[in-house]
Amino acid sequence: MNTFTELGIHDNIVMGLTALGFQEPTPVQEQVIPQVLQHQHVDLISLAQTGTGKTAAFGVPLIQLTDTNKKHTQGLVLCPTRELCVQVARDLEAFSKNVKNIHILSVYGGARIDQQIQSLRKGVHIIIATPGRLKDLLTRKAVDLSRVSYVVFDEADEMLQMGFQDDLTAILAYTPKKKNTLLFSATMSKEVAAIASKYMSDPIELTIGTKNAGAANVRHEYYMVHPRDRYLALKRIVDNSPDNYSIVFCRTRRETGEIANKLVQDGYNADALHGDLSQVQRDQVMKKFRCKNLQILVATDVAARGLDVSDLTHVINYNLPDEISGYTHRSGRTGRAGRTGISVVIVIPQELYRIRLIERKIQKMFTQCSVPSGEDICKKQLLNMIDTVMQVEVDHGQIDPLYAEIAEKFTQLDREELVKRFVSLEFNRFLQYYKNAPDLNVSAKPQKQGRGNMIKGREYIRDSKPTQKFTRFNLNVGRRQGVMPQGLIGKINEIPDVGRIKIGKIDILRNSAVLEADSKYASQIIAAFQRSEINGKTVAIEVSKSPHSTGPKRGQRTKTSHRNRRKSIS
Ligand code: ADP
Ligand code: MG
Image (cartoon, rainbow, N blue to C red; front, side, top):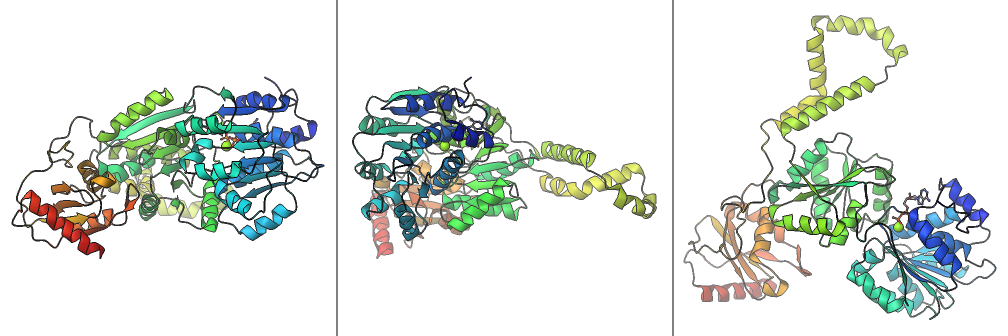
């Protein structure tokens, strides 16, 4: 193992690193730093999971290679989010604490551009930027990249997944042809490979561990439940680990907000982090979470990007992300700094194949766990409470003078009764809640009709006469938007807290769909679909005004629903 000095880092920077507690370089730093320092020209790809120390791997050589006698911008770091920009800038400032006259600045959207322009005018050696804002600044001629020597793509896979390709192309057009490009990524997605072949010449590829591998000290677990039980399963998983400190990942902003709200209503110390919050709100939530005033953070992938929290007990996938690389990112948030973490996935039987895909990709097996029963949880909580009692510090100075009076009050109770009452004080909530709690586990075997309508293929169209009980809904999305019956059924099955909703006919047309379901739940169904997004299109749903007791033939029904759709749009 080399020291930073042996890698060629100057003393003034080593001092900054030591002050941060960096004694020795991490493997990524050991690989990358000499490559950058020793070569006149270097194009380099470094694949390593989150938490492996990539920031210093590029930040330290970038600082050392900066000529502070010159004023022009020499290094550019591109990051996917504002939070990451801020964090990278903060890290670079700390590394260069003892470097005189070096100017580092982060620029990102969501903050005042005029102030950023002013700061840039003073001369900045290293700019850390989100692609969108940097493009704006370039258009306004507030930045000069014509003499940049190093361009760094940080979290390249994430940046590309967020759709920054075009911005990157535009930005790179402002940089000189002769420069060094360093690309950092947790995964080698096809987008990353494409960018590398487009903008890098013959790059050195450095990998830590297996490509696309999850962090070594993360245990992967999944719990299989019925779609409508996702939330209940989440609560049980959390209740079963009394020292839980976790991020719960959801797919959409809306779901993030909903889950956080429900958790709060149910008495959990939770909050949401997503893109609809203002910067100030986001900063507040993150601060609360970092100092553990918040136990459960419910977040979208993007919002959780820049969050550097090292001792999470769990990462909980409320839903699986769309891409496998997303899972790697999520699970990489736990098991950091040498600790063991648990990455939990709540899956429904139809998603089991995705667990297998992930296993192949990360080359690690998942453990299937049973959703703990109410009894398990109560036992766990009870034992935890007893531990807490054993560990509590008694302030004898304060308590002793009162003891006689306390003892007097308790004379009626023997020891056993006293212990029971005392335990019940904290514990009744769990006993009450989990009394007669059902088993939430389901198996992957094909479900019998009836439990949740999880029927494959087209069998769902039972040509039953629509009865009073069914309401017909018109939706403004159809085959062209990729709508499938399973998708609609899935969404209905995921409506929480209502039990099984009976579904009748489903007809998917070119640009619309007709769906029949139990009238009792019409409002929940409308709420579930209305303004949700299906493949980029905002869904509008309405109750069909056409009578459906006559059971029209297929052709007629098509026309009817088509007309209704038109009406609903005008
Ligand atoms: P990545 O960008 O790979 O996700 P970071 O650069 O954010 O990782 O580093 C992850 C954590 O490890 C940070 O808290 C950082 O301060 C710490 N760290 C990085 N390098 C070292 C080192 N050489 N010694 C000790 N801690 C380090
Ligand atoms: Mg990083």
